[in-house]
Image (cartoon, rainbow, N blue to C red; front, side, top):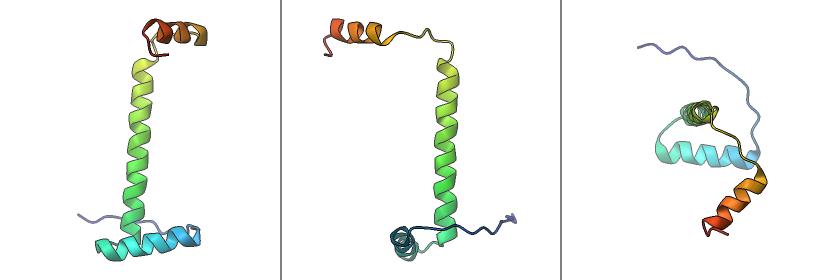
Length: 77
């Protein structure tokens, strides 16, 4: 399978770049591979958060006061 790639310029903090280079060497992976994987993971987390939000969107909202009372009743505070 041929994967098309897009070249971009990203400005990194020098210490982050150094850490990324070291990780690339130690894991025998390219910096591009590490960055692509990190972006995929971040986007996957966002997708999970969006799905969780959509699942709970129809739940009844409760006030802060009500939540504190509930926590006290349950012995959590």
